[in-house]
Each structure stands twice: as structure tokens, then as C-alpha cells.
Length: 619
Picture (cartoon, rainbow, N blue to C red):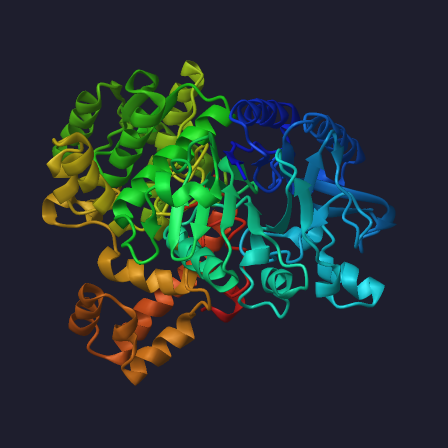
């Protein structure tokens, strides 16, 4: 049996483009003598579409394009993911019933799912966590079984196709979450394989977003499934970028065939590819990746995912030019490197915006960075404009507005940050027909350590899912491994992180940010990324029991032991940052640009929160 695994780029709601890509892959599969071509989950309409699923006209267009795909199946069977519509039934919200479904077409028509009397195979398990909100839009096999008064396994059945040689093959079809069944009572693939008519082959159609370390988890899951079933598992995932408004997700593909404890990839990660292969012959012409093999270096995985994700965003949003506000610090330096690599250095302008508080060291580092990247550069002082703002505030005070004669130092700092971002960087970007990024990292976004409408603004926060330690590690990786020379200046890597907005942040005196990032990164991670997330009280409780250090790296645990000798000191620090996290940090995050997701808990739709939820308690 020759199977074409079509790792296509799936664009959200772009039916014409997705259909064209699928049509081209079908033509290639036909030329390669494939019996079957398999596409990802929701390959035709896209997956993260928001409430576009509520538009009847869009659903009708999905059905029309699906029929056009079926018409191409005269000499090759086609298996693809799309929305399955049952016009005779309604969802629980009263709208027309929709399924996340797999369609099988052969000989110019869709095969009928005989047990359901529907022309598709519905997804059984709908994810309803992290960024997923499938139950908002789709019905599922379990609900259908409940309606019909039968067990879900009674509605499962393989799809049967004919090969070119006349042989009939039973396909055990599942969609993404159907395989991730550890915490579900119903396990679709196990039920399929224990039925009287066991499949000859298992297939999983996925539209599975990238997260760090996910491929290792996939290998463990699907190798185990293949071993238990004694069958090959064909895994087909999408590539590209889709978003849920506040969070941008990349899709890494990683398609291939799982056979026992081996994985045989058929495409490079993040790349479109269609390859025809016979599972029975795969061991003779493919090199397997053993399940036990060590995963790739984390920092390399971050680098590739960031560049690929940013590239997808650039293409899909049709962006051409970027203006990066470069301070001489590490975050803006890394942002400039990323954009130069993805957009091309000729399309990136670096702008340094010094005030009286910026050191010559960071000013020089910003200029050197632009030279090293071969990007256009300008240094634009904000001193005069800041003075103008202060004079106008005094004018307002003289006219009766109750502005203090001596401003709060934080107000003076914010004036500078907003003048840099909202006025100058935004103006240069507008003049060039460009966009500008928010350079904030995840550590800063956690506690709101940025200025709303200032450095918090931008078209995207490409570093918004990177902790500060990851930013430093990635910067060093670019210098040592990718470029093999000093692109990000060593002064930037060595200098103490600082906003340089006041005398209290003078880097020449060793002053700067109030966070010790190697420790606070890990503290914040406990609050943000743990699956069962910790809070202020659980962290304090762990410290009192002497178990907190076990949750941290040796470096962070050492800092903890050396700097918090009393419970009062420890509690004061934890409560300070917890209050910032759930208070002003949350207020700023809901107004932040979209974040390019890398981890299992990126800010935005993947980290849902209520503004001001804890403010009344002051914690």
C-alpha cells in the first residue's frame, strides 16, 4: 500500500489557498502511484478560526470545496480533515450541528460512515484546555452516542478503501486529541483495535501546535500505540501559523510513520512536503529515529521555532519592514537579530532613543549591533520632547489640574518610555510603512515590568514566551553557533539589565532591574507554566516546609538560601511579585500585543485570566 503523507501548510479560513495546496499534493501523489493521500486535521478550512464557525456562508463554502476534493479521487483515495455539517441536527447552542471530522473520498465520491449514516468520521475527544475551545463549536462522537443511547465504541468503525491492486484495507482513523486519551474514560484507538474488525492501519490527522519538547511526547505516545496495536501509525500534522487573537501558534508538522519503537519522519519540521511511501517497505529505505534517542538541544529548538513562527507571521500578515527600538540591552538586541534573519537586514531599521540616563556603553552597543547586522540605524534623542511634556504638565497644573509640583519618579520614567515607543518608534514605523515589535520577555510580562502604551506596544511580542534566562542563552547561541562571531555585542551580554530611566537604574554603578532573573524566572514559572499551577500561598507554604528548593534549579535554590534568611524577607518578595502578577501585570497583559507561543502556557488565550481578580485581597 503506497501512502502519500501530505504535510501541508494550513491557513486559517483560506479555503481557496488550502484547496490549491491540496490539489497540487493530490496531483503529485497520483504521479507517484499512491493508493491513498492523507492530509492534516482541518486541512481545508483551518483550525483556529474564532467564531467564523458560526457563519453559514462559510460552512457552505467548506462543503463546496470538499466536494471538489472528492471529485479528484477517481484514481487515488483522499483522506482529509474538514468541518462535517449535519443539517438535520442542531448543536447545544441551537446552531446547525458541526463536527471536527475526517472525510474519505474514493472513485469521485465520499465514503459513507455506515454506523453513523454520515459521510465523515467525527472526532471523538474534543480538547477544552489551553488554547483549545472545541466544544464551543463542535459536536463529538461521545455526545452522539449519548443521544443514541449506545456506548461510544459501538459507533466506531474503520473506513474501507480499495487499493489499485483490488485489495481492501481497513483504516483506523482518529483526529489529534483522539490519541491523547490518557485522562479520558473513552479511548478511541483502543476501542478500534479491540473491535471484531481490527484496522489494518492506524491514522492520526492532526492540527497540533508546536510547544517545546512536544515531539518527544508525540514519539512516546505514538510509539506506544503502535507497539500495543501491532500496527503502523501514520501521523500527519499541519505546518504554518494560526492564532486565537492574543496568542500566535506555529505548527511544526513532524509527520511520518510510527512503527513499534521507531519513528520514520517523512518531512522536515515546519516545512511543506508530500512524500509517498509504503509502510511495509519503510524499514528498508528510511532511517528511524528511536524513541529513546535524546531530544534536540532546547536552545536550538527555541531558535528554529522562533524563526519559523516569525516567518509564518510575516508571510501571512504580508509584512515587509520592521523598526526595532534598540536600547543596547539584551531583549532588543535579540529582537533585532530575529527580525534581521526573518525579514532580511535590508528591511530592518534599528533606532536608538537615548535620554540623559542612557550610558555611553549601551548607546555604543546599540550602534554596534546595527553595524554587525548591516541594518539601517538612527539615534534620536528624546530629551527635548520629554522636557516639552514636563513643561506641558506644569502648564496643566498652573491651569488648575491637580498635578503634583514634584512628579512621582515612576511617572517621569513612563513619560520617557512612552515617548520612545508611542511617539518615535511608532512614527518612524509609520513613515516607512513598517511595523514595530514589543521587545518584552515573559519575565517582564509576568509582573508587568514594562510601560503600558510605551515599550509594551507593538505588532507582536516575539520574545513574550521566553524567560529572561532563555533570552540570554539564545543570544549567546546566535553568537557562538549560528554566526560564529560577535553579532550581539559582548557589552550587551555582560551589562546588568536595566531600563535606564532614572539615576536608580544607572548601569555604571551596577544598578538596574529589581529582579534576579535566574531565581525569579523559576518562581514565576511555578505560577504560570505548571500544569497544576502554584500560587503565592503554596510557594510560601513550600518554603516553610523546606521543599521549595526542590522545585528550583541548583542556581536558583542557592540564591534562595543566600538571600532570604527570614520568613518575613521571603514573604515580602513573593507577595510583591505575586501582587504584580495578578494585579497590574494582568491589566497590562490583556492590552499587550499577541505573543508568539513556544511553551505549554503562553500569555494570551492560552493563559486566561480576569483583570483585578485578586486586587481586593491585596495579594
